Image (cartoon, rainbow, N blue to C red; front, top):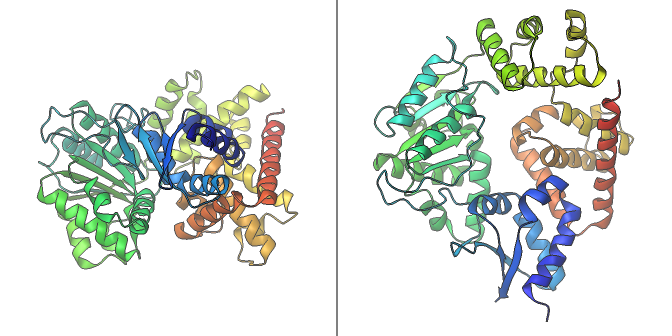
Length: 447
């Protein structure tokens, strides 16, 4: 019989075909097969953060790959050898606190770019910022829960991560999750009949940071679990910070009980930044990028783009990159020309174009309602690649593809990920489309 190490090396060979090079290098390359007993395959990984990502994003693919190789149904357990802790899903905290401020800080990797120091404060986000600082410094004492809401790209996630940084620095357990991740974990727990284990992961944390709560709408069981966790944490005076794209009273599918609890503390909205704030954001970003001499360009960008912060930052990065690649000077004329078409994520545009070209379809069919087999396959492959090859969330991908909802995109992504493990032709198609995407990227850099 082959050893677990040998079996896992075969599995890695298969998985390397199915996932992007960046994902393989980041999440799989340092893993190792440890043992297999009673149809449970133990995979060693370097830390709980890797386990969280693998179990949330790649669990079905890894399970199917090992099942195919071994010829029988296999379940997966991820373990951090140095800790001796087995996991089938992401942990909310990375280690258990002792109940006081001397406990180890969570190992969750909060985004280093999202801190209070680099959050640009303006008249329309000042309340949300001040409240976030206060709950970070005095969790459970000020506003509990703190509910932040705004349209996409206004800085909600930035503030959640900033709170997490302060909590971790102060030795507290802070856990960040999204409704997407929470739902995936809960569904897995239900399938494995481990719901109580799932709930217990949140029981001892000090600060829960929950993003995009609106996507729990119409998920009755998931909402019940969320409410249970919410009430337990709140009763124990643990800080809860929640972000959404609208205020609690406007999330129609939430019942009155949940809606009232979300409004117990402070509800703070973040409005799109005014011109002065937009310019300040661009100036700060230009400093970070070490891009001097752009003052007039920044003013034009701030005047032209006003929907959200993410759009501003994306436009600046796009303009400076294009200017360097083409060698053109940044003038009002070139800015206006280069800004044309920056309203969408450049990566998703390239992906959609490559998929449409491959299937010889008008690109409009990817965003349309057509349901023939070819169009549906192309659309789902687009969802899969947008998720794997760009930084977009399922919600953002849905907006790019004709305002489809989160659940539709999640289904499309999971369907392709699952079928790739058993369908050689599909793997070949996606590999060829990736080649087209790379070709598009190369050609777009030619002056």
